[in-house]
Length: 112
Length: 113
Image (cartoon, chains in turn blue, purple):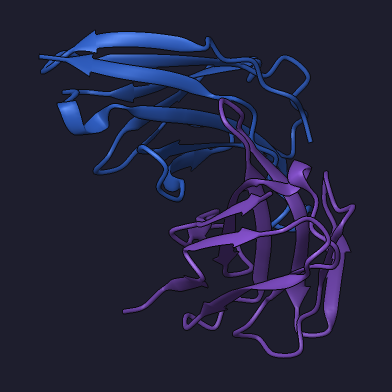
């Protein structure tokens, strides 16, 4: 599975969009990009995933560059409850889903 | 809905003691896995299972054993606890498929003295 690089920390004003970047320059054509977040010491929570196209759900949007070497998770209207560590993960399509490797992620702090 | 249930939530052990962290899921998921998380670190995969009777090692398997006799349960055994195993342990499960969603338990905080 390809490695990812994320900034260790970011902050964002409440109500503004939070844009969290992720570099995955060695990603291959069959690897998906996943995002999870972890609030305090709770178990991580799935946010979104994608392969090539941009994706949107009720939580966030995922923008993947055309060359697929990087992506951005967008929280359109950040709230204080979005303060968490966000993990970007890439996974080979054929690998077992349980074998996900989490890095250190990005600590997002949303301030009032 | 219970989801993924881990027990115990907290445990203190002495070096050399053994114990089992329990994990159960009621979603009929094929995939289950164990992670550990140390302060300031991301999650590291210990062991995982793709179905009953099938297990495999992850990134940091040493000092831990697992078995998968049923679809629902995936216990993690510490054979001889060491202070380096002080950590928070998370169990996770998912369907086989393309949704990509891992469901995590609330974690088990283990301290080895």
